[in-house]
Every structure is written in C-alpha cells, then in structure tokens.
Length: 280
Image (cartoon, rainbow, N blue to C red; front, side, top):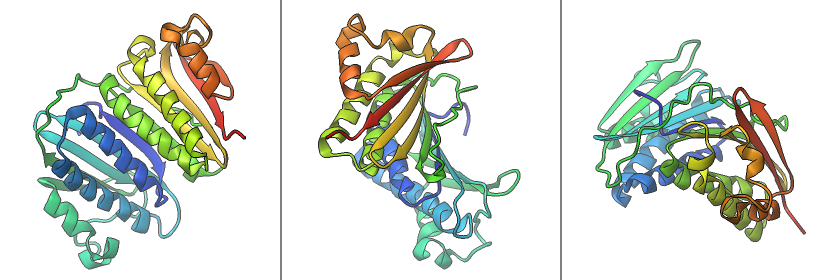
C-alpha cells in the first residue's frame, strides 16, 4: 500500500474487534461516497481476512491484528496483517479456513489479492477493489511518529489504536469506532450517545487543532469506563478546547460529556487524555 493509509488500526485478534474494522470501513465509505454494493463486497472480503487472523494466526491465543485502509483514484486498498503463523493459499486448504469460505470469498470479491510474508513471522493480505468514489479526498498527512502509547488496563484485547486522515475520514470513522467501544464498556444508550457527541465535537475541530493531517486515537476499555488519548494537537490547543472561551462553545460541551481530562507533551505537539464513565 503506497503512501500513508487513510485508516490504520492496531487491535487484538479478538473476534469482537472485527466489528471495529467494519465500522471503520463504513466511515471511510461514507467519506468518499462509495455505494452500498461496493461497501458490502469490500467489507465481506476484509472481514474474512480478519477472521482468518482471529481463528488461525495465533493457535487459539491472542496477538496483534493490523488493518490499513486507503482510497485511491482507482478504488480501495485494504491490508490485513498478523504476526503469528499466518495463512496463505496452499499452506492451509481453503475449506479449512474461516468455515470453508475465507480465501475463496477474498479472491472472488477483490479485483486482486496478494499474500506477503511479514518479517519475523506472519502474513500480510493485500487486497485491491475497483470502486468508484464520488468524493475525492485530500492526501492524508504523514503519520510518521504518530504511534500512540495507549492507556493500558492490563487487558490487551481492550486496547484500540487507530490513525485516521484526512479530517473528512476522521469525521466518519472516529464517532463510529468510539460508539462501538462505548457499547463494549456497557455504557447506557444515553452514555453511548454522549460518546458519539464527544467524538463528533472533537473531529469537527480537527482542522483547527491537529498538528498534522491526521488524528491518532488510543482507546482503553474497562467495564463502565473509557479512556481516550487523542492527538497530535497543536501546542496550547488541547487546554484551549476546554473552558468558556473555547471555539464555538465547545468547552462546556466537553466539560459536560467527560469525567476528567489531562494534557501531556509529545515533542512539539500535545496529546489530550479524556476519561468517560457510566453515570448513574
């Protein structure tokens, strides 16, 4: 996949995390105006590639699932990567993979698919889909140095790290992913709505606050709690989001929706840590 992807996800290979990938795909499709038929084909193929990692890459254990999604003038590129035993055509019989439909579905729905060895072990499945989009995107900013040290609760499967750009893609992806994680944290319907409002507010002002052409978001999930790290933000902008003088009245909204925040330096930029808890 050439250049920086529009969406990069780093997850555990837990089965429930495949839904986060599908939500990210839906957000990307919305940003570029993909039709429902194209989205369904892409989502099905990428889901099967992710399921292969869930079922086969780590011999029943847990390990990283990495997904990269990009739009190009010709369509959509998707890469699914593991760092385990991997799977390739000819290594495992197709009928043994993902209930007997994994590899055939990927090969049937993608216009091209390549399998690559990952240094140190694992497999990368690179898929290309020809799909016309109606909304061209600006190039995402370089995500060099954008890796986040996610807030750990000691449960690897409950940590999600994603990098999203440009802002048009973040607006579709970030609220979907955070809302899904809020549901996983056993938030009430009202609190899930609060989480989506928070995400909408943050990405709506990403152009004014981000110090790069992308946003990186790390999320840690525990029962009735979410901890979110977002950045990189321009120096001084993280604290400026809070308070009565914040842009477009955003400060009171953030204060009402969150249960605490902290700002930390990251080179010449800042990271914003937010806490959300189930209330009542």
